[in-house]
Image 1 (cartoon, rainbow, N blue to C red):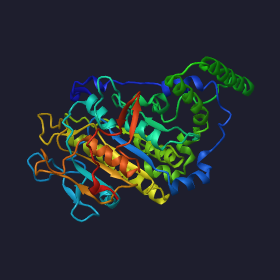
Image 2 (cartoon, rainbow, N blue to C red; image 1 turned 90 degrees about the vertical axis):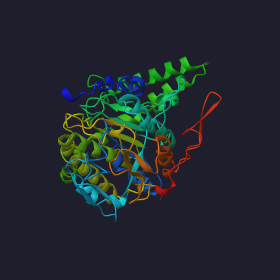
Image 3 (spheres, rainbow, N blue to C red; image 1 turned 180 degrees about the horizontal axis):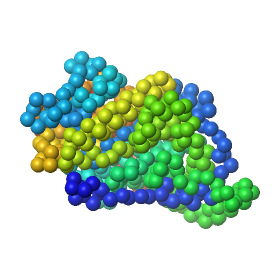
Image 4 (cartoon, one colour; image 1 turned 60 degrees about the vertical axis):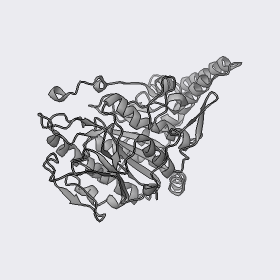
Length: 431
């Protein structure tokens, strides 16, 4: 990060285990399904195409600039050096750094009117992953955890929520909140393949099964006579490990043809997007792929010239791939950051944190392709039409996926709706 480090402690890496440690512990306990190739299950793929909905979140960690992506202001004093280009939607223009997406905007909705009033990495990221700030005594689940609960299947052999690491990314505040560890993310912190997923070579199949039986026996004895949601959630997490071990091939891009791998490209972001496509095709409800580090306090234009070009290619490839597989109507792609970047340019030729007028995109199921909602002023300093905060965005996502945003969960006897009371979805962008 060097001279462009903004001083936030949230740039420090934070690593955590899958389901509170269940993966590491369970990896020495279960394995008898490791030869299953879930992608070969044509019945599952057919069912997905008919009705199941899935989400891939492209998380642009650090705060991507709306001015160099989806809301350019060429000609403004602080608009920067890049031109805008016409897209395949009449009247909608985006940055010239995104020529591939310019030909695919008919599939994508741009929302240009986010105002979250938060320019802090940590709290901004939490809001944009949860749709609201935590309360003092209540920790809300993030989008992935909610969708894992709403769209996951009890008999599924694949994880419900997968989050990929990024080598240069700071804290990724994925959390299942009051939903418990059953819906916590499976976080890949060191590579594209889950760690400790295979049976140890020194353990025989018989020993392996006997360890599983012993663990089940001890768990049942401990649970006898006890009533605890935490205990139940913990046991469910262990039960999921068996299916996870059967999912190993889903994380291996070498299962794809050289042609497909070449389309996504050799970058970490491209490879993880390809794995994300494999996962949602196999039935994983929610996958988060992060690309960092967009925190361009210095040399903003050089940074974005490199990173936006990669985002453009990977996003366009993912859209094409899903469309070719007949999945684009069932899989939603979201691009999101913790905030945008300032229209003003600082003395280091960078743009700073800006939560008052920035953009996001949604592509795929339930969303009106080609829609462009909201508007900022000529300099990009404020929203002049259609202003929304995180809550309406999340309500829109839920509604597009067929989930009632006013649905209540219960924490004890307290009803907790998916979005705060009084918040409505943006109906103009719903298909």
